[in-house]
Length: 324
Image (cartoon, rainbow, N blue to C red; front, side, top):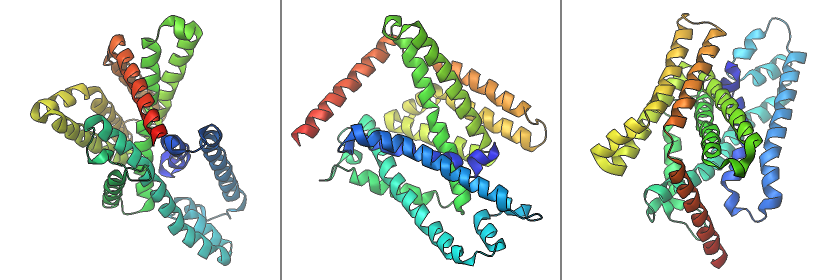
């Protein structure tokens, strides 16, 4: 379970979201988006299955320490005497992270652009170049990405923390599904649709909670710090001292949720709570947090107004793109 986050497995499978975030710049979305959604999942699953099978089939006896090495595949190649593959793996150790950085700087710049669109419409973050890319957001994201190299000196540590952050961001999906299913009329989605949405929403939230917890106490500590700083910065930008107090109060459930998972991880590290009771406790924390998020939601009328506003923005963006 710890390897799901620590080995970068969750981070690798998160590649499916990149095509969705860049969907508005795709020439033929009906043809391209299904490929960008399913191919990364299928290819990633195939590659990881083949890699795991090769380790189980070829790992000699007495070298089990390769599994905890910084580069286990490189160690396995050296043990088997396949020296010709070592330059290929070393080159890939440079090319693959650079490709990942290139993709994620482009993708997360669109997220930063969306944040600027909500917080400061018409500001620098929302400026586009002649290719339709948020150039200022790209540079800001590249600088922020370089800052992440300071507390995480190795690729393994960096990917482990980014995996925790990516999975943490996925918590918004199940909660949104539950909120929208409650806000929708029973006639619109039907009894079966409402039940299915609740089952999938709660199950998705629990799975994401477990994966965030599996990131370990160090990742959870950094995640808690990043969350508090983000909430404080957003509140200060929105309304200085009053906005800061309002945002900290409004996000109390979220900060408490991550703090509780961090406390559980420390309890496991100190030997106070063992497996599987720690995972059961994490599930209980997740259920309580999910219930708290649903209680803190907007009213149905406000949600319907937000959905209508988003629809109008989407139509105006489509008209602007057609005119351009």
